[in-house]
Length: 346
Image (tube, rainbow, N blue to C red; front, side, top):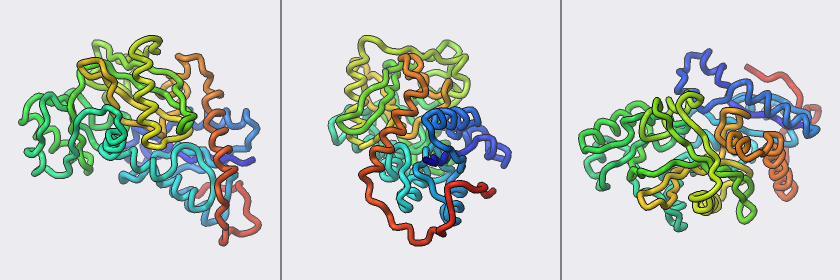
């Protein structure tokens, strides 16, 4: 069985002139190598495809795979994480993680919060601001917290993200609108501890892999798990597996959000405690990083004693089971002589 690997390689974009923040969500060679090794241990033949444009070129050329292990984040637009799954869906090729609808929905933090709130999951009150002239209409009690509506890896978050005055709100939201060219999520700031919950499975079969507290050290940027704190996590952050309270409450909230959004295979739900200790949904990552030592989901597994190989096998097993019941798509334009192997175009 041939398994393709789709990904955005950080080094390639840096060499093309992108900044470190631009490519913060992309993967390094260590992640690709670790995934490839895990898949080969399962008996699969692997084929490195790369980013969505290389995938598109190879599909047009006639290349096919029995399955694609997708970790491609995409470069632009709120639908960027949905690009690879949508393209593979059109060709009837099963791929890991959530479907295109869920990928696009969950990248927009405001829409994701609307869905989970409608399902009764606690989440901070919020507004989505798409233009400077809408800032004055925000009617939420201070302190507030502001971040781009569709970024990950803490992009756009720094100590100024916690907002205490109308002047600060105006300044921060304008800066984010100008820098990221997308709406800004403004929500009630929660003063409690921050957690992330690893999840595997879907629907009623979804289960927690562990609850991890993100503890900011004295030299970390204040108030949040920011871009700088994530990039320098070895020196600024301590990760602790939660054994007792509020672990069970965090699991219940995370699973309720995961199921409400219909995520699948594996990922993470980020939570923060309100002043009364109640876990609140912040956001979900249905395409969580998979660096074996530095990404949050594998860190949770490492703390919980779950081998990296076991995590990857669980993801692949679900994808293959789903593929057995997925209707086949006629491949009208595939040249008969083509196989999964080939040279990746530039």
